[in-house]
Image (cartoon, rainbow, N blue to C red; front, side, top):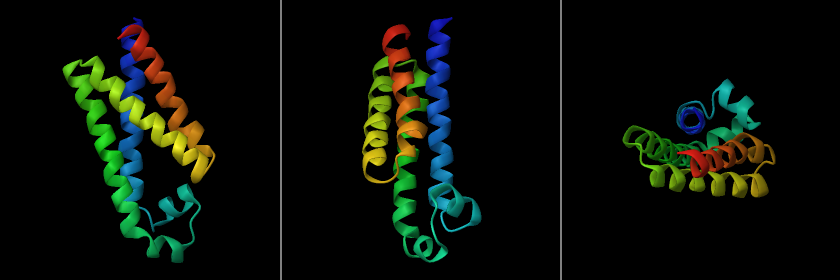
Length: 118
């Protein structure tokens, strides 16, 4: 049961990063992206290529987590959750404090669950 909870937490983090990929790669300068990231249209238009690059990296994080789930590879899950956690802490300290709660906290919880039960 607890292993299933750990896997569900990993799946949640992976899906969240697919969502972030979509926001950053495709919706950055659209109403949903502007609202999610608190951007002006002008700034979003000017940084669209940079955001798409960020989105791609979030996609790689999601892919690693999905691969870890698919193969049941605990080390893969731990590694990619640690990457998400580091990225979330860095983003929370340098970009927006809410990233600590939206990205880093779920990763930390999933990391703890996988470390203990997967």
